[in-house]
Amino acid sequence: MDQLNAPATARPVILCLSKAGLELAGRLARALDADIHGHAVRCPDAPHHFGKARAHIADLFCSGRPIIGICAAGILIRAVAPHLKHKGTDAPVISVAESGRFVVPLIGGHHGAITLARQVSEGLDADLALTTAGDGRWQLSLDEPPQGWRLANAAAAQSVMPQLLAGDGAFIDGDCLDGLKDWFEHVPRGSAVSLTVTRRQQTPAENELVYCPRDVMLGVGCARGCPADELVELVMQELAKADINAAAIAGIFSVDLKADEPALLTLASILAVPLRVFDREVLAAQAPRLHNPSDAVMDEIGIPGVAEAAALAAAGDAGVLIHPKAKSGQATMALALAPARCDPSQLPGRKPGRVMLVGIGPGQSAWRTPEASQMVLGADELVGYDLYIDLLGAIAAHIPRRDFKLGEEEARCRYALEAAATGKDVAIICSGDAGIYAMGALVYELLDRSEDQGGVSDPARRVSVVSAPGISALQAAAARSGAILGHDFCAISLSDLLTPWEQIEKRVHAAGAGDFVIAFYNPVSQRRRTQLATARDILMTYRGGDVPVILASNLGRPDEAILHRTLASLDIDEVDMLTTVMVGASTSRQLDLGRGNAVYTPRGYARHLDADDPAVEESS
Image (spheres, helix red, strand yellow):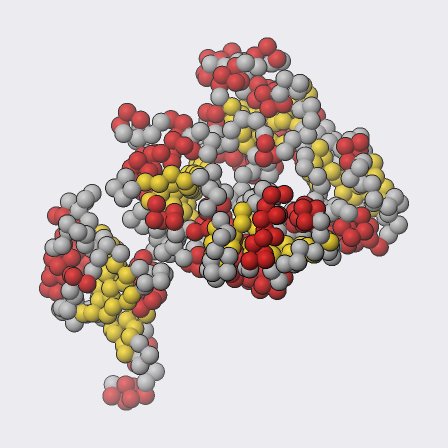
């Protein structure tokens, strides 16, 4: 499955904090495909800059990017420590001494750090300090086989490894052993554990690890709406008949019409392999090689078959069909063997496109969720208003981008959907939350229309759409000013570009009658100077002029400003398009605590608090 998390093969970042570190980074960058990020003050000549080192390191780590820090190990450890999750998923973190003499993999030894550290030490001709027992003794990590191989029972490595370290060596065998013989060269032979290399089905013993070559291509076809359970059961049943280990499957392949089929996506998730699709023209070219062509499929989509054709197309001209088409009521599958092991990131076909709606909050990394950062890193292209993409800073500097101006929202979303239809993962970068006055609704509106009704093409309608929530302006304004959203509230946009003013005015009246706390978005612009004043006057008829008002501007940014006003004293000239206006309910209260003002809206606890007051009980 194509994860939101960045793979261990993501482009590394060489991070430097000094001039000497920058010089070393330049040498290392020539040996690795990596970006250089330098401290803005100490390394002004670096290609990409950051300000606060610890925050930037944490941001990179949460995004999944491997980090090569030319700095003290302690800086890296303190920055990533709060974000550690699991040794099998944490991004690699490597410390390099500024002298260039020592390289130490700190984090991610089970997720590519050892391999990357070896490349760094070779590039610098430095000493590699390995603390993992297997790497120290045998120059390999048993749970991290070479590219093109997969450990079928990876979870067992944690218990098998100590047995090998404490025992008298490993019994190494299997019908595919030749491919890993060199890798096992330094592992001592014995009987403490078994290391088996095969693509055949194997139930591992407690002291056994099973390694499979990734050279089997799984072709799949199914009817629209096929139950996922039916497809999964068919595949597992036929793998058993063919005596093929599921870990030997390099990828799942089908026709492009099935790029959004839930059953295929579920199967890819269960097998933890990529899903790739082919155009019908590519599959039609496999017709002479099919064992079981289908007239029904020809009538339906114009090609003689899907499962066998997709498996063979993936295996290439030298590939062979090793398990012809098998079928259930609504699904088909077939297996082909490729002539060589495959890198899952370089499989033929195209991945199903994906549009990622990324809410980045106000823009600062501390307010951006790890999921949002992971989506940014996993994108093939960033799309959005140029200011919003710029706010991502160095974390996204290496990713291709397509900038759009304000007012080009429809073109922005349409481009993202159509680009995703070609197999790209496209991130639409939104300020705040993508689903709150941002691009989320427009993306779905385009998907809800056919192409002749102003929507997008059929391939674009088949792309996956996922969303990462962001901190919205109303949340940020409430947090910075107290707890004004402590009771019922609503949000109203005062922009009449897309909504007639008559409707907006009705909503203001309704919110006033309901005594809701109100967050006003888009309160004014250069041409709109009367709507906020009108809304103010309407609300004063419902709740008077003494209710607190918060003017929150540039939230989460260096020039952030919070102003406290009342409804009667609200001056329109103090408000601009970067201001969120929060109007309290009749019950909202402003406190002067000496250290600053705070606004809160009671939720109704007063009757409980009053009931606990002896004076209140006496008077009653």
